[in-house]
Image (cartoon, rainbow, N blue to C red):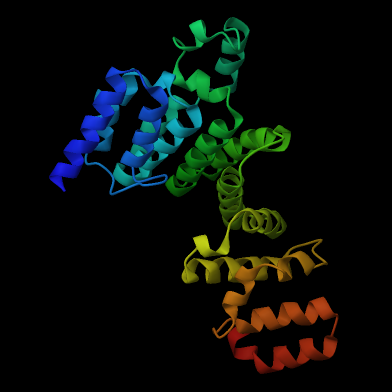
Length: 278
């Protein structure tokens, strides 16, 4: 293992010395346990960032840099506060970004290479949404749903206005948005964001336990949320079938009865599952 770590450090040093920024970016992604061909993450990644990555981060692909930063925070931050301290400096305020845009030519590489990574991240919608979603998630874990909501709303403008955005970024955004509305309501907002999250998230990327939790939560929201009258889209999601054979299977059967418009089936399920419902 020590030999592999030494080899990884050697590759990083070699790519840096030769200014091979693309190869260096890919190696950094692998070094945090992400991407194709990734092994176990290197030790002391925060030290690697402070003593190495920070010096040239504005030369890297911003989407990859954000992936690296998020991975480091998740692997090594002991608490949400520590992760926020690490990630937040890379997120510009809206006012600061507006000033930067007016001062820095958007595509002038001579200027951009001397611009802070925060300003460069702000120019890339996918990188910005990834970073905002992660910081919003941490704010929610810290017990500050208002700060989480402010970031989710800021990120939504980018999500709605960007023509091409990867499924993984959409998944990250709608995951946090759903978690927020699960905590603060209303149920309809949770339902809509959770449904969109599921549409961008492959079921095989979730454990069975996680699938069952999502299925339970979204099924409850579908039943109690206002202005939710059609369960057709929900019923097509594979994650819902994870309730089969569990103590909450009655939820699945109830949704099926609603979808068919069968009051007879609804009454029968209520009678059979009254203990579980209570």
